[in-house]
Image (cartoon, rainbow, N blue to C red; front, side, top):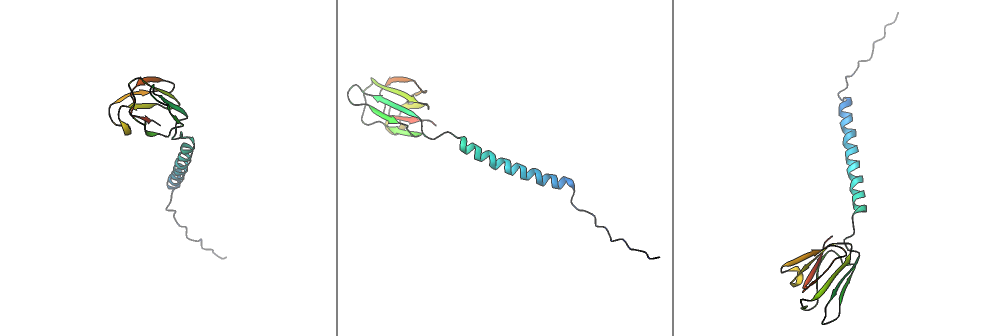
Length: 125
């Protein structure tokens, strides 16, 4: 009768737990990348949609169409009875000085207007 020797068995050094951690890490990374891609695709544009109209009683109106987010200087010194109309989908802030300096008078939500002496306007995104 012949005897057969069994091949020596090796003990496994990895466990199901470590494989589960790797799988969870992969799922987390893939989820984060997919979430970032969806967030970028769904992020709002950096320009407001609509118009900002600045009507001066002493001269022509200034109209900003689809103004990008940021500061916009108004040409010239405008009198105190100038009308600023926010016909965009973003909030704007009206300043007394040029380049968004001076006292920020007020924030105008979409669809609102005010009578003021504006020097510049900041479109918030």
